[in-house]
Amino acid sequence: MRNVEKVLFAVVGLVSLILLTSPSASPQKLDKTIFIQAQAMGQSTQLGQNFSVNIMIDEFSTPDDQKALLAAFTEKKNEGVVNALSKMKSKGRIAITGTLGYEVTYIRQFSMPDGSTKYRLVTNRPITFGEAWSDSRSMDYNLSGVEVIMSPDKKKNSGTLLPACQFKLDKENHIEIELLQNAWKLVDVRQR
Image (cartoon, rainbow, N blue to C red; front, side, top):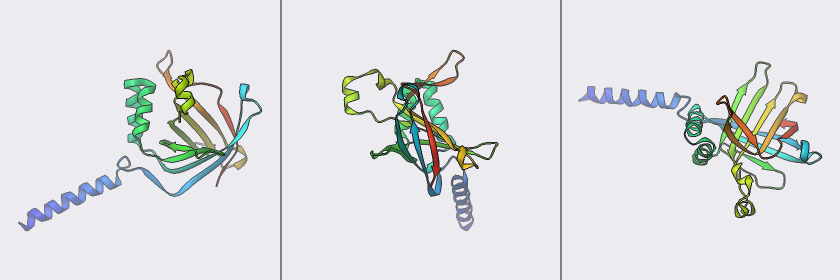
């Protein structure tokens, strides 16, 4: 009987160790929240407009999150991505000055060859009551995205804000991002 208990204890311990150390088993929780502050500058038709953007990153998405989004896109295109994102838990927040902001459910971090760090965020875009009631074309663009590049040379920090977008396939079957309006350029990007 003692041998059975020892074997059972060893198996439970081994399985627990594998689950706890597997990179896809748990989110990549950060010890300290990353705060990124930037100024969004309008391009083309929004030229001359600007506002502050605050991004808070609490944890990074797992490779399993990425696989779930790719599977959802393969199955149901943009609608599948929106549904998959709505089932994921929050990884951080994005807020425009003067608003409470909203949750970001997918965040990835990439190390670049030049030593800079790239953050990519994708989340469901909050749809206002007026927008839903009028059922305008903007309802099709129900995702928001952000890309921020933090360079070792702080003066070269940059980024792009995509406030209303959707994912589509181009003629060569590559995923592309279609915007409702122009992207906003992020300047004065600082990590706090």
